[in-house]
Image 1 (cartoon, rainbow, N blue to C red):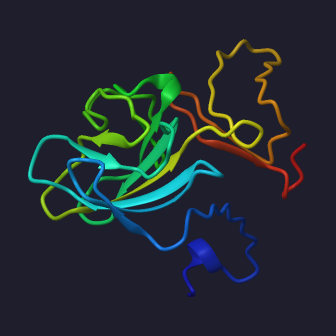
Image 2: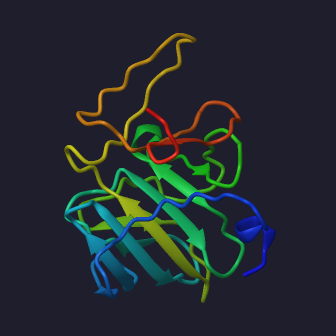
Image 3: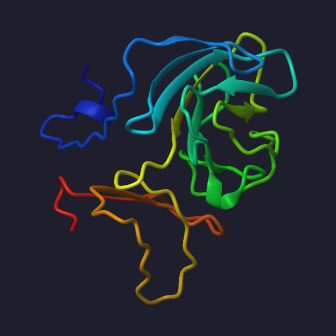
Length: 186
């Protein structure tokens, strides 16, 4: 389209794309049936579901190991980009579209860590639809970790040369930072 956010004349853009498992299938592992496209090979799934009237719900994610990083977005209603990461625990959240520090102000994960079959979502509203992007760690391919800043060089061992790095401060309001090999990061 002609929207300047994604197609401004002479603008340059970058996209990071993950392929899950193809056509979604019904997943009944959780208390709410979800539609899931998942790839255990790459540790990535795309999950869609419709929320219940109140409270929390478990949602099948389609992976064989527990996700370490989950992004949830309301496709209807007002739920923004909610981020869960193993390193901050499943009692907290970040927001992809905010610079705010980690927060426990909303019960997005119902204080429950994901399992090898489900994650728990407190962000349920009757007839609102949601999408979740779930990543589990695959040795030699992906790593989800944390570190404490020192003001000097910090080393995080991944076991491979990353092609994409996403970093975000959890303790203070900061922007999300991205480096990738395609745009010349080393």
